[in-house]
Image: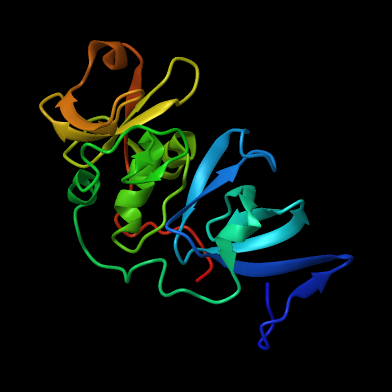
Length: 211
């Protein structure tokens, strides 16, 4: 983090610096290597806490606590506007529909490519609220329900949660379908067979996050 003068604050022997994503989409990788797994993405203006630098890479944590490695060339020392819109009432399903047709991309967070949990995260984020990034975390943060209604989340997986979708009612879901794109469709049989249940995110839910 920075003090009021904008300087890095040092904890022990390691400087921790808050920088900002300076490109439209910056991949966060599992390792300081562009060929390693993409874990998630930072979007323009998003604050990132940098704990370590190595060979042009920074080990960062997002404002909502998600770690990864990002190329330092994608970062700026200056804030680039509001990364999170003001809170407002709205329908996360309608926000998710803004991504219809976007290709599926593991770790994706934009209309250039997005994954199932990224779609849920971004739908709520467009309403000014932060929910967890991963499907399993989202399911844990929500309340289990026996009778789903429009806007609830259907969760899937054999041994653990591996997929998540918005429930539209009457057997229809809206989701980032693996290897395809963001679609509205009848719940595929392959997913129905591994459906674990339904959960509901409280509209007032908001993870602690830096501004």
